[in-house]
Image (cartoon, rainbow over all chains, first blue to last red):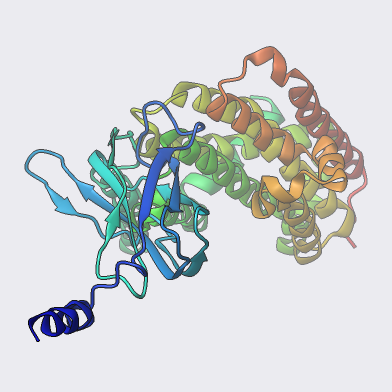
Length: 178
Length: 251
């Protein structure tokens, strides 16, 4: 009787806990920078990262979702970044990866803001409860001298106002003479 | 005082002391201000580096300068005719070359003012970046013949047609065609037709030189063929203006 209970428990427990070791995906993710990336990236530059998500299990992975995350680690400004302006290619979804095969993805990114950043690729599939992540890549974005509003505004408003003022003054003087 | 100087002074006075002349300068500064404000109000554009922005501004200054030169040139003879002052001018003891040179010096004054007006804008967008001094120098070197050439072209058409409207429209069409590189961008200009047009288009010559010296830091000798192109444009349009000014249509 005891052996029958143990036998039933051995069958039921994995089913109750949802553990399917035979179906579990095993993904390994590699992440690297493109060789053409600037050595000292500055704001406005474009960078590319390449990821390779390999299915190391014996079963196909279906409904794979992989996404890129960017975190700012500048001292005092630590925060996850909204990639809205940085990249138009933020995720791949719905891919299937056969056992032993790999899904390689190019992640383009435009550097919007100076600071220290870490980029990471995460992946999961529709059957998994786990999220797999790549090692992080860290890079520094230097500030580039760009157009600054504090220089432009006085000129952009000042010169038309100056010429307009001269016109008004001349018109006023002419009217006074006549 | 020579007749050339007298005519040039009259033209310059019309630009500096006349409300209409100041109105043109105001319009020119508003165009440059709008361009500058666009740069800081758009995040995509604000990421452009200074050299790229200076290059774009130099092209805009040249194009706007050419538009105003065309307006002034179109008024040179046909405007005198419409105001009834052309005949007294023609029967006055003034040589044709003096008349054309006087009008041309008026154009030079107008362009000089526009050039000076553009300097604060160039400084505001370009300081701290590369090749700002080169940009200022090459804007004078290449912008002057291009702008004056358009003024001469409008002057020639003004003397030929006797109508401000006709000469203005024709000159503006030519100007629009030649400034198309500014609208098309380098991608479309890389075709065979684009390259052929670039080779003979004085505006492209100036624009490509701005690109080469401001962004790519190319040396002066590499710009000599383009300098020859813009100087040839100036010479051809000057000769056309002088030729048609000898027998302007005033009936």
